Image (tube, rainbow, N blue to C red; front, side, top):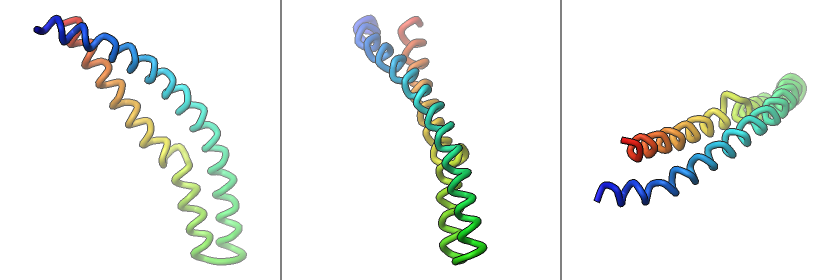
Amino acid sequence: MRIILKILAMPLVAVLTILGGIATFLLFISGWILGLASVLVALAGLGILIMVDLWGGIAWLVIAFLISPYGLPKLAAYAIGGMQGVNYMLRDFITG
């Protein structure tokens, strides 16, 4: 019974390995692009904060934080790490 489960887990390991590589690459590229975008949005938010409106400037600064590498891309990195953790757990199950 255990060998059947191992055989069934092998395609899942292959899919998770490929998806993990693709997701890591996309996270790297999107983090770089969103980092540049967050700088531009933060500068616009500071301009709005100083010249126009307090709450509008704060809203732009919050958006800049969310698209910065410490916002949503960090959550995506945790999700990719969890997916790769499942992948390694299945690999240990197959080889064990």
